[in-house]
Length: 312
Image (cartoon, rainbow, N blue to C red; front, side, top):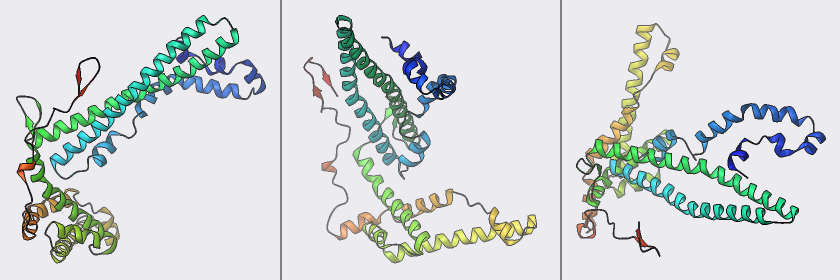
């Protein structure tokens, strides 16, 4: 058997005359399927990934700081690469089984045994074919994360022009962590305000861990929401005066700048940047211990195979 023949074989041939004679109403359904099969095979490759680039880039990579984004990219790349490597060994096993089944079918003198072996070979071929779409999709997913990671690194100064690669240290990462956690705490506090009108207990604790009191946190959220209401009122008034709309119609046209929230979070990170270190020192500890950090990625951990070659 040939994979090409398998791919081109129609359902009518696969199902056989006995089935179609017993259920003749199926034949026009198969014909409609066969008419769209080339498009189906082509378009299937678009959807072999677990999620779209939109979800990858806007949700999976929803991080506040550059190195956090780079770290998430690396985690996703590693996860996909590990899955590919693990499944490649299974693919090698399938290919070996296919060769064995084919050999056994060719050597078999019993027609029934040969038919069984060819059916088993067909089953292996279908699985082998389908896996190709997922490997290609996984590689496209990895490439997207590589490109996103490189873009973030270049725009944030974590790019080595000479080596043309991402370059940062563990110390760089630790320096960004207070920014990430302050922005995350205030972002979640805004979500609390939207659902209950105040900061919830969990995010009150989160803010206090960053050295920000409940009173300060609540005041900042209240001021921000007041600014949003003022901006909304201004826009409503403008539409009433310039487009002769009533208040309800004007309210429907209000569109706040989505960057306002991000700018607020950045302001909070700048304003309270020193608070995490202050609160840690009050507890008698240091926020960083540089003796426990490394200045460059460690490439010493490698696996040595029986072939004598070293593999990462």
